[in-house]
Length: 241
Image: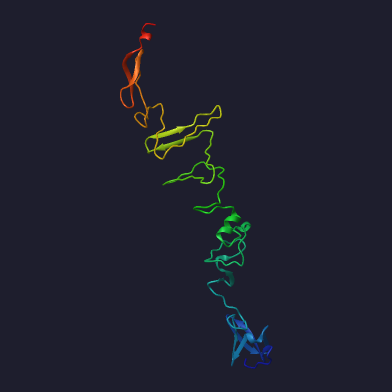
């Protein structure tokens, strides 16, 4: 076996071999062991070694168990990676951004990704200009709507402004209009003012004057700073008419 006859073709001269189980047994005759690259085969004395893939000149390859699995001689990638597989990776490095059509954003920055996806950023932003089909806006704390440099318009087929304390509710309802009407709140000096209603909520407030009703034929007089009642003067012309 140590008689190596050629660099490019290793010949085991004057011997022949047969296989018995996992053993190679040699007998008289001649057999040759060919290699695409002779440097992938090493010999030392009577030992011939086929170098594996860890050598710069490859012989028989070895497989990293972290990346390959071998079962009954069949070699597979871990997680059985194939065209229909769904493997899991700890990370993925791409040479360019994955396109939207392939499930990516087509961008490498958050701003460009939002632009490509037609999405708005969270928090204070200028991305949202129209809310088309929103049916509810809820806030657990406060909600401020302002248009500091424009006109704020609230419009609906039925418009209601409401204040609730969890038990009772005060509502400002707008009746269905039958004509174009504009109610204007006039300007005034700084302060807090009441909007008076038929509920009599302005009694004694802001110079309001009230009366419980008068007596026919009696001239009225102020009975207090904010109330009107009967005077002692009678309209005689009314009595003798």
